Image (cartoon, rainbow over all chains, first blue to last red; front, top):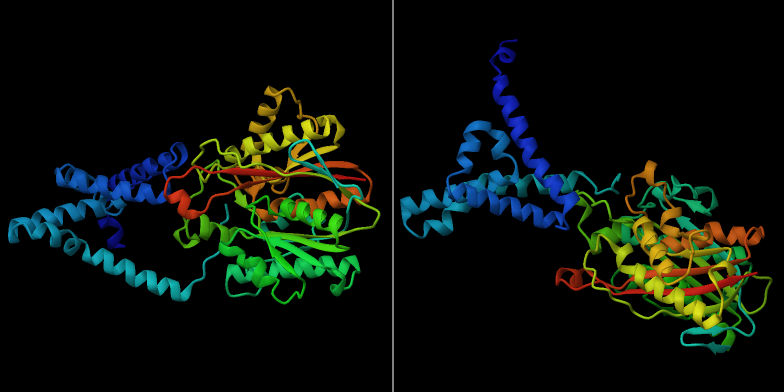
Length: 128
Length: 333
């Protein structure tokens, strides 16, 4: 049971709360505004990218770990971080290549697992 | 037939609704009206590979059921008016391609069933003996076409309505024992500038009001003339709006007004938010529940006002508002 003792409970709680709060924002936007889900997703990515570009989002990542990187805002942050890093290394061309390079793992995994899921499952009617 | 006022036709020999049929999906089968439908499906695919094929099968089987229940030979039915919500009305045209009856496809969004009844009644008064009218919708195919793919799994906002999975069909005849279609009031397109495709009740209520007022003006009738004034699919939100709007215009419809979208689901238990919608909504609720009420002589006069939102996914994406329409038929014994 060593692994159980090695769990950092505090960081688990932090990531749960921060990740949850980001989702709460999304829920409020669905319930209280006329924004479509697709627009909310785009809003989250761009917000993450802007906060990432300004260096603010990193504080949240340092604090909450996966609670900040897993929600869509984390993807936006990743794009911004990657672009900034690539500009430093390769010059202005990095602004175009860096973002997607940094997010390559996530994008490819999404395509791969999405494809697998489409093979083994069938869409169903919503419950509500 | 004779024209009354601006938008109403009164039939000299009112056509009879000889027989009706309705088939609904699993969600409707769990609703309060389940026992009135001819058939309730256990799953939304009904053994087909796609939702579109399933919807075609639903309308096809509903039409066949209505014809066989009526006892009228297929060959004696002279025209078929049918429509649905899918692009180019493929549910109806694919589902009914083997029907071998002259086919007139119609689109009036969710008002299609009553549009069909109106046109059917006119053609019976003009020349035909038997006419078939049908309409269908399917939650999954409609959601996919008008909003988002179901695979996305996004949430539905509280004002959104639930597209009814199901079809209703009616056989109209020149002679019979009723219920009779005595009047039709065809609606104008009314656009009050509402853009939210998740709040169709609000978009369609002004159109329903316009047709309602027009019907009363043209016929000289008042709300109390009818046992039931029934709108197609305004849902809980639209129903409230229409009740208020009518009151402002001096018509109190509170006591005998209801909406098919409100009746078909149990709001609390089924979590369908603002209620049911779709061509199948008023088609199944009328064919399932109200036709039987007529047959048992529990009601004698209904004003059925089917409401439609005349948008498509492109117009929504381009930020256009939603034009509403409402067609009324007066059905009496």
